Length: 265
Length: 301
Image (spheres, each protein chain N blue to C red):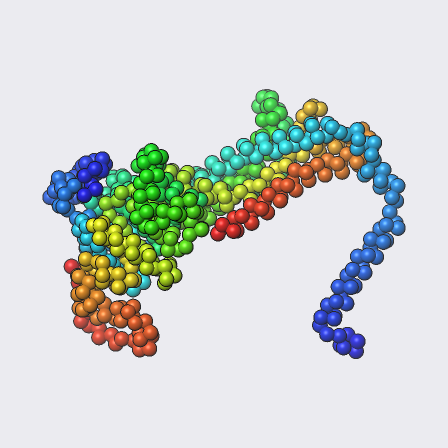
């Protein structure tokens, strides 16, 4: 006690930080001693298994993941734009419809949408949806709900004076929206929309539910299939790293866009 | 003036003729579109309420062609609202507003057509930040007036030169000072070849040392014969440039007349109190000018 009283506040902070490092080092040392390195290496870093995955995991799985994500994103963006406009409409029923849609699809798991469209709709209506259409609808319907709110917020973030200036120059409401408000709103929503693309990239893994043929495999499916074949976690680890190949650059892009927006204000 | 070559004018006049609201003057306005007859702005019994708050309590007032009118008054007096009712940025609660022979308060009027002829300059500039100075001046010319690119650029460059900013045509608004932004905003309004210009406290958001350049541009516009309605706190500008000064307080016009009369020799106590505060803020802070009360009679022309 007299010791701690003798220390200044800064000295106490230094001691406390030292203790934190000590605990961390102890934990790592304990893990290193206890872990069965041989088994771990075999499970996660089996070089032979890894080699067998290439090049298909890139040329088929990675490409398909990106393709499915973009498919859903494109459809979701279009629908989200329409929903955002409805949400801002001066006609109340449009607003209600948009709000109901957004609340519904934001509130349910994407998994349910995949099941409904992948199995429910074909069974109930006896129609066979094309695989790509099913993926586009499933990812897009959910993505649209999030993007609609993002776009609406972006439009509302454009200062009212911009609208007034445009209308004062004789622009019609539609023209003012297209030429003045939308371009500015788009800049504002670009970072959150990119985030949405990251989310959709990860959600595209849900297509593994749909029972794909080999050429339609995306990363999660491909990894799972290889897991069964090789009895090794290595494919899963590599599939995970390949998701990062897509999402990390996008995340970096988001930060750069946000910095640019901050500078422009 | 400019109205002569404005292709939309005859239609506009017909519209106002149909509405038949002020029969006689509507007819003469139609005939005299290009001439001197008719007022640039005619406001009759204008009321505007925001919810329970009555901001304009019956305004009658007009601006003649080529006239420069400055509206002064304390904040909250309704002067900006009056200005914004002229191009219908605010929808009046009742009363009529007629601009260059077209009744803008007529529900059937094509307001976009009328607004083309009314230049508007805002306190906060409201330049389009995603467009260069030149594009700010051309976008409405091209999208609204359907001018070709070459013509729009030519008009835009001429107006940038007019406000002394030719060398800034490639700059984005964020790269310009407040004073420069406001001059670009004036040039943007001028590029539509407006018949009249509205200024809503154009220098209030500017650093003091930047006010002069903007006022100089407005002064030269006035000299060229532009019809101008200016809400301002710049008393020296009002005295020097205005043909008429209107003093508003509490949603009514208290008095109006030549600058020498209203600013130099105000007849009403409220005007005197306001001017004392504006012209010498330090003195007003020390002691309130005594309110002599009962004889502050309102004059609604």
